[in-house]
Amino acid sequence: MSSTQQARLERAQRLDSDESNGTVPAPVHVLPMLWMGVVGPLLLGAAALLWFSGQLASFCYLMTLTSLGPGSILVRLGWANRAERALSRRTRRLVAAQPHPAYSVRLGLNASDGRAPGPVSELDVGPAQDGVCAVGPEALYLVGVDGREVTIPLAELRGAVQLPRSQGSLDIHLRDGQSLELKAAHPRNFLIAVCGRGVRMLWEGEVPHADSSTVTRPR
Image 1 (cartoon, rainbow, N blue to C red):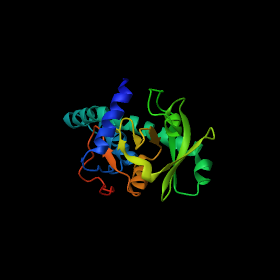
Image 2 (image 1 turned 30 degrees about the vertical axis):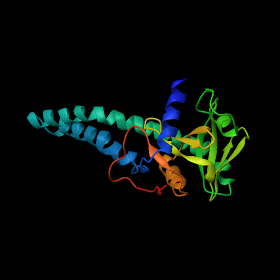
Image 3 (image 1 turned 180 degrees about the horizontal axis):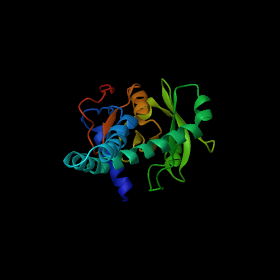
């Protein structure tokens, strides 16, 4: 059994258990954080070197160097958001063509691993491609740029597991054993839309902060 199979088996068992539903994390605003963590300290350090001398300048310069570590993390986060914005641009027309609220996603993120056969599992197998997931009142509608379309009735969903933020993916499980991983361009909006339809949602790995928005409904 592959690591992907084992992980998905454990997620399916969690979805069938009495574990409480998860929450959607609060939004992260990258630009203000980037300013406070990188640009602001750099300007402060430069000003200290130009206009001050002695211990004050040394202190400000040291604080600037100290901020570069966390600042580099924010830069990487900003770069990840850049990729998400690019995905949104590439699928803009496909999103606009859907009759229900739709979200830009990446499909085909896994290899074939002997999972339950079916159109949903086939869409999960690479190569990776852009696509959209429309959230309707009774089903999820998946459309890939290659033209493949799959409808998942909400009644057939076992639930979904939100993977750690480093992946930003949602692993969807059907009652017949099929599974599909989606990586959304705007994960929080997508999660809120899916949870709003009453889909059972769990969290894997990192636990959201206490101020996260609880949008799931009881089983």
